[in-house]
Length: 439
Ligand code: SF4
Ligand code: SF4
Image (tube, rainbow, N blue to C red; front, side, top):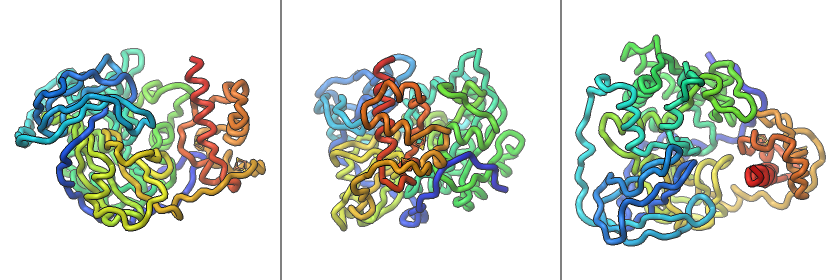
């Protein structure tokens, strides 16, 4: 049975057929990688290696700077040849550690530690911290922070986001198909860290095979009393945290508050898989699965890649370009970031690379607002996108400051439905930046 849905949202073409049946492949090892020190929300990690050092696969190369930060590890064995500013996914230059590959892989993450139930919550959390895990769905919030709610904010429910509502992306769906046991075990571990007994997985109803697989896995492990799975309507942005919480629990996260304020922690399905690997294999987060897709790339598919691999090498490994790309996007088409350079490396939060043609991305010039109200209907968080965008376009930030721009989740639904082609969310971003800079 499908659960009730949230207000607003849109139904963009799914465009998942290019890759949804493609099983994971490993990409070749790149000769040089560039690992950013800021791949997460919070403070950049601080390097603990120097130029000229030889590093092993999985070795700590930069240490978290404070609580809201994350450790960074070497994705490959090799020599540190530079520590410098380079273009990154953040849209500006950030410090990266450059490693030239040399030496051998130690295969040290092929041994398994299955006695994790003997560890207590703090010991398990320590492994998550050590592994440098961040949210794998794109937000890249350090996972240990979410798993350490303060005593005054007791949590009673873990939600696992397997919705994958962004068009084109199939990475999470394929992760579920490839690793259902590991994902369910990752949820068990996360429950133990949070010291709670209830988890709900949310998955859209266009992924019936994955839904059935997870349901079967839960039953086979006799976990039905603590872990359940709910079918969600296929609608964007179904996987957004606040919408998922409302749909699965009926709880509403107030403006400016966090999921833990209503007793909930949300983790992406890729994140619970990474938690499993950190605990069972002692493996740091230095590689991940991504979808590479779009009409301009020869071999769309789902691939395992090392963090720090330049996007250009990934496209080459996928057979190169078959058409001139109009835009290359890191992430999904609705929430992702258009890349200014193909030298930009994959980071922990990269779920996909879209190589789209001019025709697929052409937005043309935008016109004046005709006050049709479609953006208001589409907004899942009850904002007035037209008013905020119209004010921000003319730098009337005195007006936008009063319109709760920080509640905007940048889902892009408003811009998607706008008949005037207005880049509404880009204008709202200006309003958000203004307010954040003021605080
Ligand atoms: S959808 Fe576009 S044209 Fe319609 S009210 Fe919103 S901003 Fe104006
Ligand atoms: S205003 Fe923000 S939250 Fe509302 S539809 Fe637009 S981008 Fe999404």
